[in-house]
Length: 491
Ligand SMILES: Cc1ncc(COP(=O)(O)O)c(C=O)c1O
Image 1: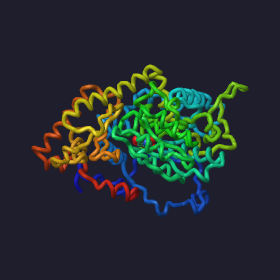
Image 2: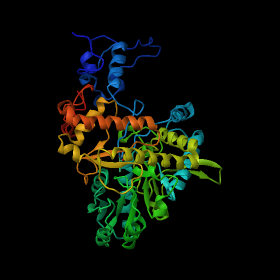
Image 3: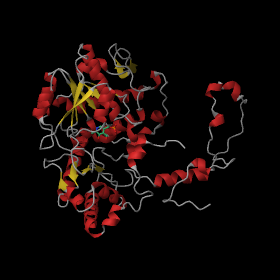
Image 4: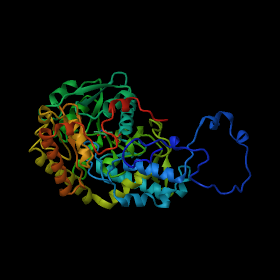
């Protein structure tokens, strides 16, 4: 047996380190009567025979997880300019408040009278989110943006069904720059995707959109600014074209960080808005869940919202869970949603206030535009339109010299930076999508530029080193497609 390297080489699974009889804890002597498991647990639920649990000492356990954590990259470690994903720093105050016993120890089965504080927080949070988005009501049930998308599409379905138009309306229009979750959600909701192309500025081709709009359209899903980081100034014309044929407008809130406090989806004509609270309101991302992706809706969609809904009862002066009405699409989440995440979002909003929020989006846009101005010296920009909080470069010139966007991204890992998003949006050849967010200092942005310039130099001086990067990570170039398609999630 060899000693375990802390950073390199394969990390054995806990089950591989297991030795019979080793324990990580000493259990107290039993002071209650023992029960025969065979009697207490029905045979169908007893699986102890074929479950081999790892038997390890506390020391093994701690070193195993510490080693794994050191092989990971997180927002608390350094720069994380993952475009479209908005990897936002999570202020510690959010964590402190969410960890207060009054929030942390709540149980979903507690009676309403004992969770008045939590309900009050949710009712207030709903008011703030309505104010920020220009919507009439919010449901907190969806666990992520993509879950919000599906919920929003189910609301569209219920709305058209109530009007007796579901039989004819089958198509949801989506721009060719859209995030992959948009078409996936459309298909999951049982509709067909109708793609609208972008124009030379990287914005929706409005003539093409108007040509697609007819009475078969369920609605349009769009994010503004779009995934190229460009604000679509035709949004009112887009909304009018969709509304004119009876369709609904869905706002993918992934890019709200660029405009929050300055303009509102509701005022642009949207009927449904999802909020990726991890992107805009600094909650942990949670890998798409357990997070929160609340959605807000306009007046006409309120009857279809999932429930129960937190509300204030004027007659009793107390907060309560209000049961959904007869047109509700029903629950989209067990219990009440991921409340701990919502506490963090509420703390963030309360800390910043309206002025602070406006400032955040201004800084996010400023940081992105500063980076773009500097990087343009070496990298081509995909579209000349002025971006908002993120922008897309193309590694076309670098590819002609021998290195692709993926090589540049992999080499960034050796510079201690999380790579930007690459090969998305699909409409850009060799896309490198960069989103710095508002919390990064000028020094960090300048260091990032220096890294990208050094990598660009390396194409001509040390191409082999670049093509085999990363050299400092525990693993170098995994087969990402196979890992995503055939994950081995249990030993
Ligand atoms: C434009 C866009 N839409 C939707 C999503 C899905 O959001 P979530 O990761 O919260 O499911 C993302 C995620 O990064 C996104 O960038």
